[in-house]
Each structure stands twice: as C-alpha cells, then as structure tokens.
Length: 345
Ligand SMILES: Cc1cc2nc3c(=O)[nH]c(=O)nc-3n(C[C@H](O)[C@H](O)[C@H](O)COP(=O)(O)O)c2cc1C
Image (cartoon, rainbow, N blue to C red; front, side, top):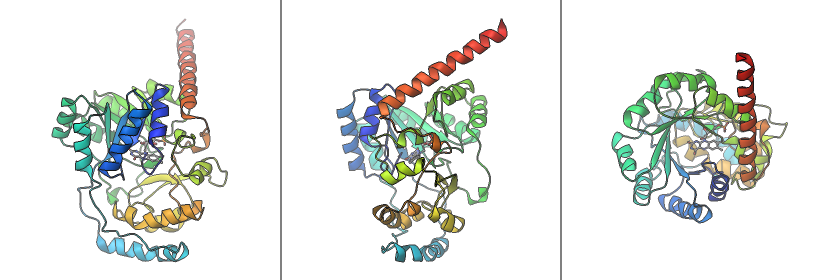
C-alpha cells in the first residue's frame, strides 16, 4: 500500500507473524526504496515482497482536460492556501532504477500493478530467484500475465481499496461496473493455470475461506491492516475507516486521475465527476492539496483509500491480526468440512 501505509514496520510485523508482507515501491525514489528494503531485512529474516507501479506508456493525458481540472481545483488551492502541483511532473517513478536494485540485490517476491511487464523482466527475476506476481482485474489480463511469464496473479475485485490495478485506464469504460471478487476469481481460475492471490474487501478469516473455495490459493488484505499501530497511514485516515460519518466508498479519479476506491468525502463528491482520466498528472496536481488537508486535520480533503469492508477494520497489532485471521480461517474451514461431511453421510 503506497502512500505511507505499507512501511517497513508493518511489513516486518506481518512477516514475523507468518504472513507475507509487501513493501510499497510506488511513489518512492529508487534510493528510498532501497533504504526501506534494508530496514525490512533488519526487522525480519522471513520472506517479504516489494510492489512496483508499471509506468503508464499509453496515450499521454489530454493537456486541455488537465488544465480544465486545474481550474476546477482553484478554490481548493485558495482554501488550503497552497499552490497546485505541476501536472507535467510525470517522471516514470524511477521504475527502471527500482528494477535494477531489485535484480542486483534480490528480494523473495516482487509484484506489479497498473500493467504487465515484458517477458524479459520476468526472465530476469526468474534468474535471480524472485517470485513474481501481477495484479489483474479481468480474465484477459490474467491470460496476458500468464503469457508474459508471471509466476502468479493477484486477482483484484472491484471491492478493493486504493487503485484498481487495470493494465490500461480506458475512459471508454467509464461507469462500467468492475467485477466482484468471487466472480472474478472463478473466471480467472477457469482461464489460467497460475496460482491466484485474491484481493478486495477481505476483512475476516471466513472470507479467506470463501476465496479459497472459489479457487484462489491465497488472499491479500489491505484495508484490514490500515488501522494497525504499525501501519504508516495517517491517523485521520485510520480513524475515518470506522467513523460512522463515512458511510460508503466509491471509485474516483478525483485525487489521481485513475480509478481508486476510497471513503466518500467532500473532495470526492465535489470534484470526482469532473476529474479526467489523467494518471499520474492528476496525482501530481492534487499532491499539495492532500498534504495541506492532512496538515490542517481535514479528512474531507484527503484521499481516504478504503475497501468496501472498511467498517470491519480492527485496531489490533499487525501480528495479532494475522493470528486472529488465521484462527478465523481454521474455524471456517473446519465448519465447511463438517458441513460437507454431514451432507455426504
Ligand atoms: C491505502 C491503500 C494503498 C494501496 N496501494 C497499493 C499499491 O501501492 N500497490 C498495489 O498494487 N495495490 C495497492 N492497493 C491495493 C491493494 O493491493 C489491494 O488490492 C487492496 O487493498 C485489497 O482490497 P482491501 O483493501 O479491501 O483489502 C492499496 C490499497 C489501499 C487500501
């Protein structure tokens, strides 16, 4: 979880409890990522993963649409007394430098989102013994990941918090509902032979049992870990997840220009309908506003990424949360096998 939540402390605590923590590589410099990898290694000797954003190599965003949105946000800049960011500050997020670091000093697992790397990238990670995953949001994307040589896919349902990891953000899909996790896992299971990690809205062990029953090999949880004391999420973000003031989540381009799920707040309501498909331009444009809102203690101006299950979040130390989830999973699996036993006898 980029943006601060998946910091070394959270990754270390999750790994020490026997799960697989992922360090966020998106939005970081290559040097910053390297320092965090070193820190994780100091906290745990167990396997961990690093997540990278694929650079967006599709059509460049329409500068006129970005300019219109800049005008849309002028009142926010006045309100928070901060200039808007530069939309053309679109470096490739140091992707190549991060790949070089990960190939030079390999970590056990690397996952990719916002696209699928080229076959040579998978070969290179294969040679250094790193296990690779690609986030997919459709059976077609899963097939492309399999063809390119990924070791596994992370199947992300529409319930998921944060950005949807679709390969291309196509404005033609605007308003088209995404696919729910159980349906998507079933579709991907029938389309590819790769191991599946299921993600989206999972907050309890019984839900992990459900995705395993649907054909997944593992589950990935994001929002469930945001409230942990080790998580680097902003305290206002943590509090908002279970605050009755925030009643629902929605997908929005308001903060980054790419569909992402967060708690519906004032910023999202006022600007979401006008935000163009322009990632990462809009991410850079709104960065100072989000920072200023956080400094001002104003959750209504922040990006409060959250999955649909946010109200089920539990404020537990990460290691304890892993243990509770594992116990819930055991109970659910034995309930299911007891049920199967009864119905066959
Ligand atoms: C705050 C936050 C930040 C996220 N950042 C990333 C990211 O950097 N890379 C990524 O692949 N997925 C990211 N995601 C999506 C997660 O990988 C995962 O798909 C999602 O959390 C699963 O849904 P859940 O939040 O309902 O558990 C993020 C999710 C959240 C909530």
